[in-house]
Amino acid sequence: MESGGEEQARQNGHGGDGGDPAEWKKVAELRAVVEAQDPAAKEEDDFMLRRFLRARDHNISKASAMFLKYLAWKRAAQPRGSITEADVRGELVQDKLYVQGFDKTGRPMIYLFGNRHFAAKRDLEEFKRYVVYILDNTCTKLPAGQEKFASVVDLKGWGYANCDIRAKLAALEIMQNYYPERLGRVFLIHVPYVFMAAWKMVYPFIDDNTKKKFVFVADKDLDSTLRDAIDVSQLPEQYGGKLRLEGYKSSSTCN
Image (tube, rainbow, N blue to C red; front, side, top):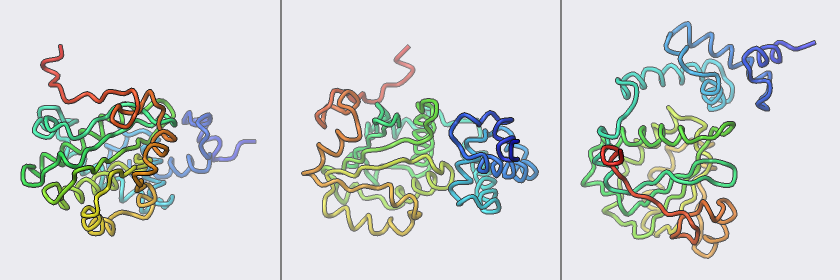
């Protein structure tokens, strides 16, 4: 005889995903709470609700508050339903970030080059839109059964002109509050000593679960660390792999 959680999982089509039936039962409880307060919750799938639930250690009250805040933010941040290329072209043309390839677990990879971001040249509101644009586009690349992405942050040549605490905190807030349980791992490589002062300012704002996902890689361990995580066919050429990172091209010129 099925338990209530097993029956709920079966009815929702989650029985074969390897999830915990008791967890899916909690997801159903969370859905009932948030839909009662905001009908827009009906548009979000159970896997999203599960990520918010996990982000709050399966506490229905905390997860519902977090999710309702997300729905309000989404209406304000994406009034037309999504962020378009035109909304963030000023950031895209800098070619400081690439969403290409996958790691060995099937997570899409984001490669970020910190020395191409300049605090004096960025508009904070456009930067926030850019973060959302990148996260949404990365999530569209997730293969079936995969909910997380991974990243390599290359800080070679990073200096004070690239230090932007406000932008870092804005990106962190968006990722932690509105895209919970999406980040799998971040490799920070070629880390200069001066970066650590900025890191110490940001670190207290990173939640405990997220802190565990940041890995500082020493130069002597760089090759083995990246090759252990990423197949050579998916590893960029600058790290000894075969993947050529492609810069920004306007979709209007690619038809």
